[in-house]
Each structure stands twice: as C-alpha cells, then as structure tokens.
Length: 464
Image (cartoon, rainbow, N blue to C red; front, side):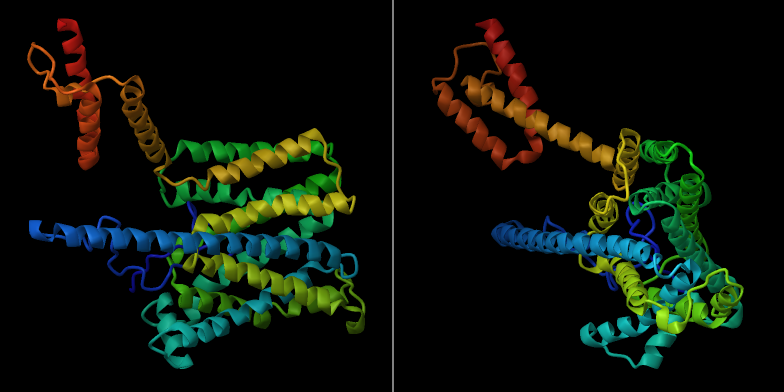
C-alpha cells in the first residue's frame, strides 16, 4: 500500500502537536539547511573554497530568513481568517436559530457543501501544478489513498461512512449546544477537543507522553467543571455544556481513528475524502430532514420562510474554515492556524457582551482562561524543554562573556599566564580584545575558553 507522511484533522485547527489533515505536496524533497549543506553533504569541501562556502551559507541564511518572514506574514493573515470564519459561523448559526430552529437540517445543508472540496482543489491544481492532469487522472491517483483497488463499496462502508457519521455528529452536537448556551461558552469548551485528542492519541496511538500536555488536559477538565458551576448547574446550562463536550469528544475521536485506520493524506487525497463525505451526506442522509419535518421535530415552515441567506452564510463560512484549517499549512505554520481557534473565544465574548447575552462573573472568566491556557500549552512542541534549556544556556554564556568586559579585567588566555611569573607586557585592554576576537572566530569553543580563562585568572591572582 502506498505510504503517506501527512497527518489529518478535518474538523478543527488542532494541528501541531495533534493531528493535521494535509501536508505540502513534495515536501519530502532534500532540503538545504542553514549551514549550507544538502542531504548531509557540506557545501564547501576544500580549504581553497572557504570563501565560496561562506557566501553560499550566507545566501542560504538570507533565503531561509525570507521564507520564514513570508510564512509569518501569511500566518498573521491566516489567523485573522480562521478566527473570523469560525467566530462568524458560530454567531451566524446562533442568529439563524431565531428564525430557523432546525439544527440537524442546518448540519445536513452545511455538510453537503463539502462536495466543493475536490473541485476547488482541482482548480488550484490546474493553476499551480507544472504537470497538469485531467480530472479523471487526478481522481484515480487520489483514490489510491484508499488502497490499491481504489474506492470500492467495501472501502466506502468500512472506512468512509463511519467518519461521515462522526463528522455529522460533531457538527450537530455543536449546533445543538448553541441553542442552549451562549457562543462564548460553546467556543471555549470546544477548545477542549485538543486535550481529548492528546489523551486518545496517548492511549490508542501510543504517542509520546508529555507532562505538560497532561497538565493541559487537567486544565481543560477543570475548565469544564467551572463552566458548569458558573451558571449554578441549571438544566439548560448543564445540557448545553454536555452537548459541546460531546461534540469535542467526537471531533477528537474522528481525528485519532482517521490516523489509526487511514493513516495520512496529501492535499488531493484529503480534498477527495471530504468531497466523498459531503456527497454521501447528500445521498444517504437527505431523508432524515424530511422525516424530521413531517414529524414536526424540526418545523421550519414553508420553503419561502426559510432564511436561505443565513443558511448559505453558515455553510460558506464553515467551508472556508475547513479549507483554511486543512490546507493553510501550505503557506504558513500550523501553530499560527491553531491560534485562530482560541482567538475566536474573545471575539465571541465581545459580541456576546455587546448584545447583552452573557453575564461575565469571576468563575466564568477563570474557566475560559484556563481552557484557553490548556489549549495554548498543547501547542508547545515536543522538544520544548530542550529548547528552553538551550536558550537558558546561551543566556548564561552571554552573561559570563559580558562580566569580564564590564570589569575590564585581563584575560589569562591572552596574557600567557600558564606558568608563575610576571604578566605579559601587553595591556589589559589589548589582551581582552585579543581574547574577544579569538572567541568570535571559534564560537564552538566559547564554553571551554571561558572555563580555561577563569582558571588561569584565578591562579594568576593567587600567585601574585
């Protein structure tokens, strides 16, 4: 079977450190690092070409910096787009329920728009790819994601249909929660799905154990309890919180099972999968809204009274959100995309405060804060502790380097004070600057130079 190296998460921006949906196609090509090497081979191999190697390394560093700046700028725009689309869809759905109280019909309508994923991807493929394929060729190539036989009936009912049900369940529970509680609480509680993904990945996928993520999961659970306590355990509040926590759990289950069953997907494969989910939703679940209408479970009146503008707005915003979340990593960092989710919480809070639909007491503010804090803690990379240690080590080295410079003391490394005797006739200033110049030319030996110089300086003073 064809191997894939991407990660998947269609329902939310939980990318790093949790599962993300896609990867940049072709990213497995050899990369040139900042030290001027390609595939582990040095850029300058002979002594006579040192100047050329330095120029190549400098050019590579400038290029890497430009790429990082561009990705950061795209990331800022992506954060704003993700935040606005997620908060906008939540607020518009809440407003729609005042005129169209049919959450399952709205879920079915919005999920059907997933059919546009693969057509939109193919348009982008025609515009950007140097090797343009026909729609049929591209479809067949993406179908290999499901196995050597492609998309068969058995594969559809065993590997696609269950995820379609989880997708519909997640969105339906989220919309039902909006009918019970305010948008601020719903958006904050849904951020707990990142903690649930970590716990399930740790148990099912045997992911690496990290203490900071356990703390984040505990904070998420504590936030849920405090959010329930904020409204005094009223029936509507408890039911709404239960619904949104169940939605977050279903989202986490979707992501972990996708990684376990299907593995990983590239852009085209992910777009095809989501389009199939949307098409299956239209074909196999269309009878459910009809049954709910005739049984008066969801009574939305005649077709003329349906707010089509609101429905299309919610569906379009959700489609834009999923496109940004799943394919945005092609132009920016996944962590920046995830920030758009948590920033939607204060945006929804400002809207709710303006419309006077929420009362911010101390318990609710603390609950929202610790849930968002747990979400941000889950964005830390796996080697965050090593990075912190390296940063502190570099800061200590700079402080040790600055102390003799401020005191104006001689550096024994340049005065030749290995043996007892009179000091070198050179001045202290010349000796110190000589040492600084020497250390600049050999940054890899900074720690050893400082240690040796300190020992020599102590011995020289004791003997004098």
